[in-house]
Image (cartoon, rainbow, N blue to C red; front, side, top):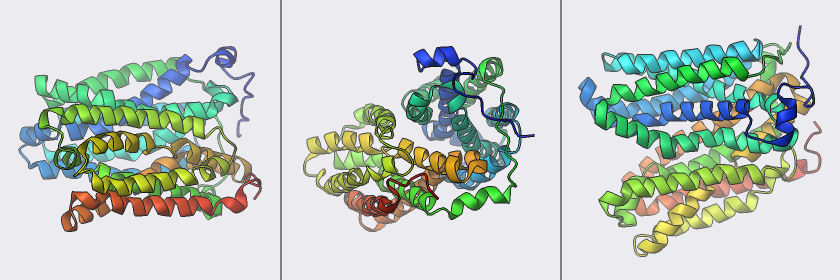
Length: 412
């Protein structure tokens, strides 16, 4: 029998969360995102070490990044729809255990095929873990902190890129790449123990059939939200995929300062996620994302000006920081759209709705990276910004198409 949702005033830790946001359950869920992000991104930092250790080319190891995204995108909605039919607490810990198994395989992989299988295992559960984490919001924090919770869960990935990846790279350089995964495994075991101890055990099992949950995909508001994220992510990843050569060849940043430049860009991205939470507080349903239509336009203009940085390096350095601040501006607003639409019109699809941002963003990454590669090969680094601007403009058009739903965002 389906369990009913625990009211905010009666939920576990209710008295604590009325007073402050960073309760222990919230911190644990943020840390879980950090671990997911570190496991996903650290391959980029230790790629040469893995290639040398397994005696394969760097291009072969680099393919793990693209393969990860291609598996992550379809598995996220499918896994989220399946997970809605099982007790949330048990499902979450089970999938975290699968995540741990994948990383253990990475640490002990004797060859590339085993490492590939390990990465596929991790990719198959990572998006679903993020989606389930989002459904904990009403049980671990107050309603007024909902968008802040969404922003911080997404920020776990940014923190991983800023802090986790450099640490993982340093460990690999000092002790070997396998020790990077050993540390991830140790931290994941600690995380599992903490989750078992403090996360609420109440469930929101749905009675809707597996296929019935996908009726959510026929809602036009969901179409627009997904497209807005795909175009927004693609706009950034057209140039972000080649951020290091842009810093080196266009901004003329000395080689020894490129790592510092990447860290600064990562901090800007973290701020982008946190700012996204503030932007998402303005309205419900489609309204927060609709309000960002002019931000998409500003993003497009700035991306076009990226073509000028070869001649104005100082401007280029400042511009990259600003582009980092805009990179995730839509994350929380799109998540609000998905979850509000599902709560009102498709209540059996909450887990699926929670997965759409991760799914859409990874599609945007794949599209943006592919288009960026073509643009770089045929036009050069200088034109990556203007090409990315096309996607940003498409994002603005999509958000403007949300106008008919503003004011009626929770009506079907």
